[in-house]
Image (tube, rainbow, N blue to C red; front, side):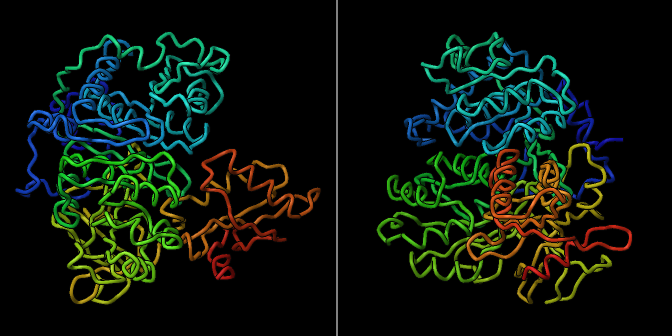
Length: 566
């Protein structure tokens, strides 16, 4: 039977797809549900906890989001989200439990769509703008998504993906509704497969809707979001997170490591499609009534300019960005900052020390995962041990395991295992669920050691996942794309160490006999990958080889490639 916590008796979802594809009870990790500080009502809608409650308590005129297009108060966000919820149900036929794909840059309208979906009882599936048609198509098929709300500037790939299935057959009853549509967009500018959209823009549909909406009476165990992550297998893995998970996350890292204030102004670079950003730029600031600067241009230069311009006080980004900002920052530019958070990849000690010297601020490091929703090991500034990731936050337990599954001794390197108030729940993926969850513990794929004081020190990844500039990248996914190019006979992709990005993607290519290895072909292959999947995944290093190392049975030996690339 499927997990009891998703029993249809308790759910508000008419569409039970996610509940039906939840891991079986015996495959779920142990979840700590009885901790008093994380108590959650049986019936709760996380949108009400994060948004409605602030307005009800008199905070409606507080600034919620700052964007180049203007300032959004909490009241404006609430009323916009309520109107979107009406549109979803009244005009677009959303049934509770339906998955809704969201696509757009970090913009207040994307946030309003996220809240609108959850208020209406849907499940938000937020995707990054950098994803291409084939990636969106894969997500839409895996989650059986028939409805998308998409920023008009990034709608083409989404509309193409929603026009067909992976096998090329037309997708029936699929709808893409654009928001942030420019007034001057003409019929000729809209792709042919989107011109039959009878609904018009989201803004036009919202025009007659009430700013009030009765939130769906969801169970705390109803799924609220479906976040996709790439693993070492190359197959996109959907991770399920409930309303309880969202509320618990809102009260964990902020309360025990970050300690935000209502007067804070958050800023950061990760897309809201990533759970790191969902927490750092939406859940955490809104839980405390703070404001967030949403940047669409997220280079380190733009981040630094944004900090200075808006007097931001809390920064969320990856170590790569902190290193890059060090090259040009002045103390005046970062004078407003009081908290800096790093996650997505390990924080090098050299970066921590250089940032502290330049700004007098200690970067709060942390490890989290899409599977666990957010950070579960970290430390507040006064407890930071430079070079260490930190200790398990209240609500989590962690330990180190040997290869045979036994508990490792203090100081011994092994695989990190964690359990607590959130846990891994893959969508319809029993094989990966068995790998990630064992004996009630979540196994993250990271090697750590624990010192005698309980601090955890990162050592390395234990799988083939490449972590570059905070992005998780599957080498197998890139290999599959490269193999589609007519010049490629064989290929292998690995991650290699890089001072600026932590790792970069490196591809080893065996060309077909009729194609000569040359610089022109190298650039052609790199551009080919950029055109097929998110550009940050392309191989920054590419080497032509005569053959690839394999076992007698033909299995690729990536470890040999990693060794020769050191």
